[in-house]
Length: 104
Image (cartoon, rainbow, N blue to C red):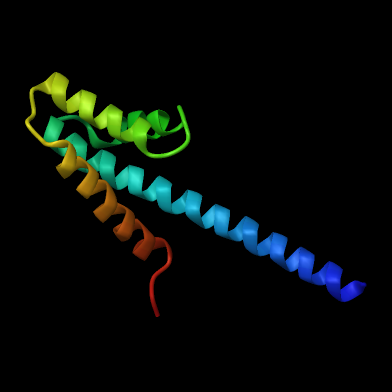
């Protein structure tokens, strides 16, 4: 019985660790994305990163962040396609993953 309990606890620790890592990666991606967008918008990067992070808290997934960036580019009259924004999000997710979990 002890072995089963130990396995269960190990599984729970791994799940918690994986979720924490996932959160860190998404947070890092949002920071990198915010800096990229702020440069395009001519805004202060730190202030804009805070706006992007707040946008990510609205709903689960990436659509809230995408809509924030899309709306801000549209409001500023910056012509960047949806595809370019989404591609940047994927590229920065990869970069964030590599920063959080560097390959040995």
